[in-house]
Length: 208
Image (tube, rainbow, N blue to C red; front, side):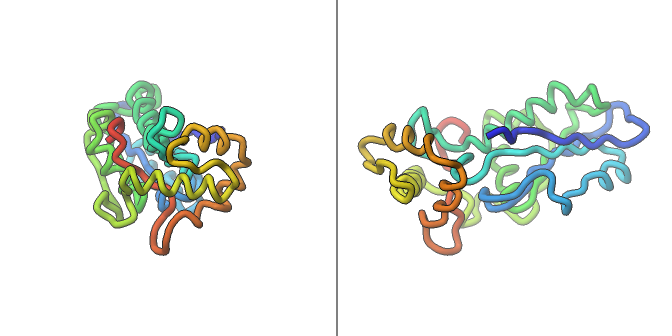
């Protein structure tokens, strides 16, 4: 899972103490990347004299598998985003950015993520403004209950021939860890019905 990186776009000449915009990509918490060509932040940075930061986070079962256990607590993707927020707070001044003027913005699942950071005591003090584009935590696909999240995780375990007994969740996690990530991805959509995304945030009692 060597995927946690950020991109920093700085206007020229290097600014001093300018506003910062931190972007979270969308993709239904299932797909996407911070490096898609459609997200070219150079224009925003150069024309508006702001520093733009885009972040990568784990998605699908690698980022949002939940079994309510220490091994699979859920919301790993949101904690990835929180780590990027903390990095910006601690380091963006080295690029000429003002850590007291950070706008968190995102589209679709990225917008849902922004709203969840607004709700989370772990994140809400790490930025000052927010922009939500085409997404909110009230969207029918944005959150699932702990029970539904556990059911989806066990369905995935069953699909890849792992133990899926609800009374032995650690066995399921141990087996899932041995599987090739491509096999997990290939079987994720069999865990749910139509018009939903398979692995999404959950109210876990830690991040939310």
